[in-house]
Each structure stands twice: as structure tokens, then as C-alpha cells.
Length: 165
Length: 128
Image 1 (cartoon, rainbow over the protein chains, first blue to last red):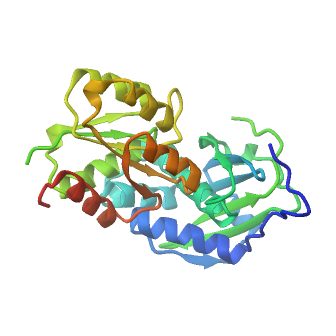
Image 2 (image 1 turned 60 degrees about the vertical axis):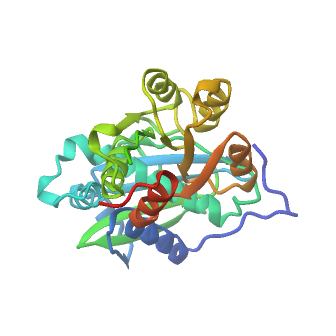
């Protein structure tokens, strides 16, 4: 792990830019159009699924993606080219959210200079939303709504304490 | 032109999504194989003729780079086209993949049309 030095400070990603990266990922991968939405901590409680992905290298960090069944159904339907009603959520929810975390992780690394700086992106893991520990103070968070269903993304540009699986 | 395609990605839902795009690119469904990691991909290649591998890089068991290295050690697979489909952006790593025989790369998030065009270009199959 290479801690950032004063000569190479960790680039910042503002919440608006994080939301833009997620929006691009949703649009390109699953034909989902989304809008940034105010982040209401109370809304985060509706999330039934969560996925986490970590990266290390030039800097370390964590991305957590949380969503409820409404968004997950839309996401899986978009990926599979199905109508939302055709999606068997049990079969696809975790996998779809992990893949979104994977893509967002790659986009964050690209934003941090990953084309020329060395990062290693881990494998996405499913986790329970309630088991995600409180975020470090420097966490950047955003919320997007896709057809009214929210998805929450948190980027912590520092290692988050161990998350229970 | 018939094409045997192997999709290598640890995400089952993404393999299904890529399968749909491949069908739109003219690849027949019964000519598409899937593998969840590089080890499974090698097993497929040892059993069946594959024309094109769509390869993720970050996978458990055997990642994409390890798979590409293993492929180079088998002369019977030297004509297999390998295209990386990954979140990877690092120029050094992608350069290493090209020295290992990767012919093209497509970065996630990709638009399905980009993947369709790449498949068509690589294997010369006319889109359905």
C-alpha cells in the first residue's frame, strides 16, 4: 500500500462528480437514466442490499453502494434486457449491485489518475446495509433516483474498518 | 460465419448481458460459452474450439492476466482472439495484456453498441 505523500495528494472527487460517474455507469451499462437527489439519511434505511469494493495502491479507499428492491429490479432489468416485472430478484439483485460497485470502483480509480498511477481494485462483495460501519469523516456520498427508486453511493478515500460479510 | 464465443467474467448477470449483446452481433446462442474465472475458461478451451474470448481482468481463482499468460503457454490456443472487457484503465497493465496477445480492450461501463461493434469487427459476423 502506498500512502499518499504531500508531493502526490489524493485527488478529490466531489459528490456531484461521483453522482455523474454513477449516472454514466447506469446509462451505459443498463440504459438507466437517473437524476441526482438530495441525500436524506432516513431514505438510506430503505436500502435492503449493499455491495462494497475496496481499492489500494497509489491510495486506498472503499466504495459502498446501497439500494432497495425497486432500484435493483430496474438495474437487473436493464442489464438483462427484460421488463422489470420479469426479473427474479433473488437470482440477480446481489450480482447486479456488485457489478455496479465494480464499475463505479473502476470509474473512481480512473478519476484518481488510474491510467498512470497503479491501483488494484478488489472484488466486489455483498454485505448487509446495516452492517456497514459508520463512514469516516472524509466520506463523499451521493444519491441518485432512477424512476423514483434511490441508490446510495459512498466513497471513502481512506480504508474503512472491516465490514462484516 | 460461425463463431464460437467464450465470455469470461465472475459476474453472472454481466455474462448474461454480454450474451444478449453477442446474439445481436450475430453470434448464435448455442455457440456461446461462459466461464466465471480464468481456470474455468481454460477448461472450456481444452474441450472446445473457441474463436473469441471476452475477458474480464479482476476475477477470483485465476484472473484475466493469469489466464492470458497461461494461454500463451499453449500453442494450440495461439489463434484465439482475446478481447479484454474490464474496468481496468491503467496503461501499463493494458500494455502487458497486449504483449500477452490481447487484441482489443473495451472499458466498463461500455455501451452495448460498442461491444456489438467490437465483436462484429473481431470475428466478421454480420449483425442480426
